[in-house]
Length: 319
Length: 269
Image (tube, rainbow over all chains, first blue to last red; front, top):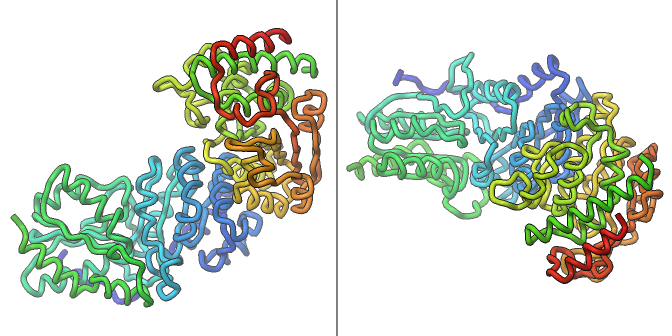
């Protein structure tokens, strides 16, 4: 189990998203898409050519996009509302709260190019607040898959789930980590590697970096547990408590602000049920400087080598 | 149901609304009084609804975007059989399902949760678009306040409705000329609404929104485009001292005012 190293081939998770969406839409005429002039960035060109009338484009109008999604669901359809994560959540947060979460509308919110995927376009286009904004909303599962396999499984799951979902996707290539045929379970972390010295927890584009960090630690004789925790809400409290008890320290990393995201959600469980030393890695509460997503993740201490160093410092703090 | 019957029901709803606002010590009585005639026409004449099957896929949709007048909607729904009339007494009480803004997961007949302004119209556009896509025959109505039209999200939705050619959508603007803090004209005066909606490609009808004989045909009108009814109403309609003043957005009548209002509304029953 511990010898697994990510395969080098990188996948854009949007491809897995649209492949599953188109397969499901072919079988289910209730599936429609709603966009804010975001056909290309959501990779919905194929969907549009197959079912032009089922792609509802409201134009550059995110509040209407989310509200229209709620109305389409009221009319018996299953809308996948797709837009850049920064605008889908930030511009229309109150619509997400009132029209989707509070109304419990069966709408799938697909946040594209999340985190710092837009890199050099700068902080206006970064979506590093969306976990914080969405995970406080009742009724709304928040999911950030780590690879194309999990993305496909999560889309399949979302379409079968009767209720709202926020699915946070990147455009930055990631290697496949989960086995083909993997089934997504809401609120269940995946044990990717076991160890007893420390637990590394991540989701989205950070999970494969955690795996590489674990390889570096193993080379020094330190065995780390690695959990992929795609579901930010509802959080997998059992896996967190077990990690705290079994390994005595938890390090988290995410393509998100360190405030209010995955690490915070995990810390809320740790302080309540199993206090152990923690280290939270992410964007350190600043507007990021210019750079690509990969550059910025390295810049903020989330290269595999830097994660490994943070893990060693954390282990030194264990009780 | 004919206009004179509808007027009688509207007066009963007004009276119950007044009593409930005083009992609860809160409410938005001015905007409730302006909207009640239209709500009555919708629920007792126009909307194809079955209180026993509130989720029937073919039901007509009504969205109360000015959700702060929820009490008027609750009373109308109760009178129409969607909930027990005696439940109105629980308005704003702890754990009542009748809170200050309507909740679609608790109150039968409510379609979507409103409260923050500028939400109902985009959702209604989605409802009408769904019917257009599926071929469903239902019609979608949505009521906004005139001050609410200051929310930019409404204009996103107005443009989309025209682009989509939603002839199955009717927007009713309760144009009572007052918002919470001041007159519309002294705040951000969007009036006249007709020219603006027509510029976006809507058909517009202007009516006296407190006159049943004008309300019913306007609601029953079917246009080839999205239809907007600019309903000229009076804030506090039916209660003389409330009419056309900014004071009665969410003020509660004192004992003396209550007796005057009660007498005025009872007189006409």
